[in-house]
Length: 85
Image 1 (cartoon, rainbow, N blue to C red):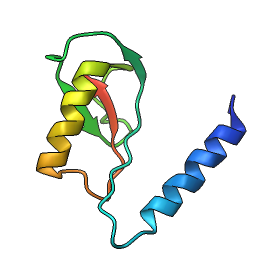
Image 2: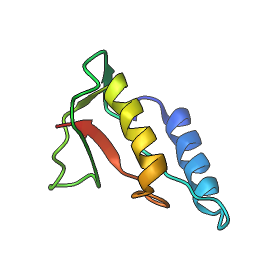
Image 3: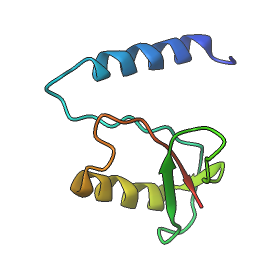
Image 4: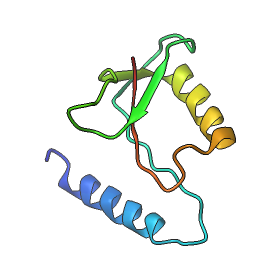
């Protein structure tokens, strides 16, 4: 709403990535980034009434989640919203 060009660009990029059949992709959406601990748990899930994450996530816990996702591949071809819980 505040940045319509940025939103349109993000949507177009997401659609282009999702259209690639041969690519294992994960598009994750982030709340506000903080300098908190890497030990903070990360909640990954779909945005909606069951969303259990906070409206912020620490950079260190995000890095830990990304490395874990590369190994576990739980969100391949998925688009979770992330947040510390």
